[in-house]
Length: 382
Image (cartoon, rainbow, N blue to C red; front, side, top):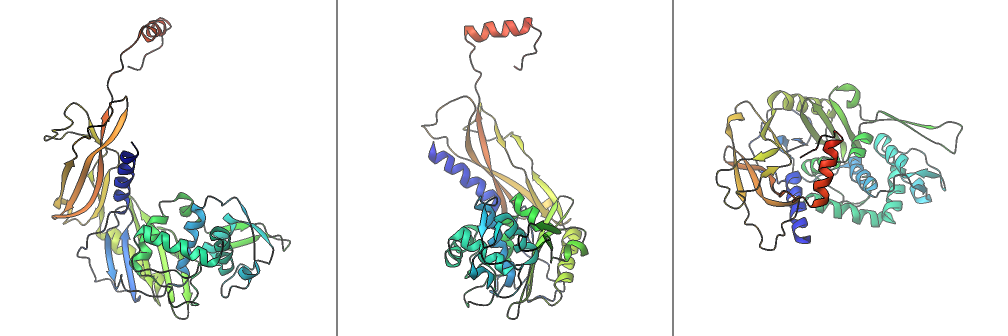
């Protein structure tokens, strides 16, 4: 049973992080960035790229990883005591005081909206035990997500280590992962946040540095960054209709306009095609599960240009049932997978499930219960 559950989890994970097959993308957009990428969030498809896999310094967009680890710790409602080391962090700050007590959730807001380096250190020490311990967690998560060209050495992105770098594409992967979390979505897209300030007579009021939230009506969130060595870095998200996009630029003098240009290109050139719908499958070559329904729990939407809409095909692969499967009411198993192809290239897949739900034989008690309910005028649900 444990092996079957692991198989289901693995296949669902593949659906979320299916490796993006290299595809021909339009490089005609003029962007100022040294590196840039635009991906569609649901599928992970690259819609535009420029030096997307080149390793570069990333500055404060590092804090996307810091934020998601803090959120996933499950301790947002806990109180953190600010250390001297956190207060001494250089660069942007929300001006925490040594010994100050503040909720972890408020630290994450200060991290994402005001890019506080003091909040980054305070989060790292609380969640990871130390800044160094937290960096280890950051790299473990990066490996899990598939960020193969990334290494984190600190929680804030300051240029205090030489081995702190990533790529535009890896940061898009990280953002795609983070955007699966509703708490991250909320914090990332918040324009103003207020937090208690025990040091003054007024509360903290943090306005989001991400100007795109006001400049571009489809923007839903993101994170800014800047150091002298990394220059301007920016990650943003945008939604229009059914399409969710993620844009990343590294070393971009005109990053706000870069992102708007990429988004406008993506929304104009692509539409979301529902290649496969949820529900029951009627397969002609269903040799293993003839008497039992096969179905898909997650539909597949994939971004495509008007010329690509007729180029989708779907292939179904069914697994032979294991001999030790027990037949129980409402037992659910992975029966195989559906693979979506675009112009002959595999681009997405999702598990096919098998439902064994035999009619339960009614005993004398249930038989008498049905008669009683019928008399009382209660409509039975078959």
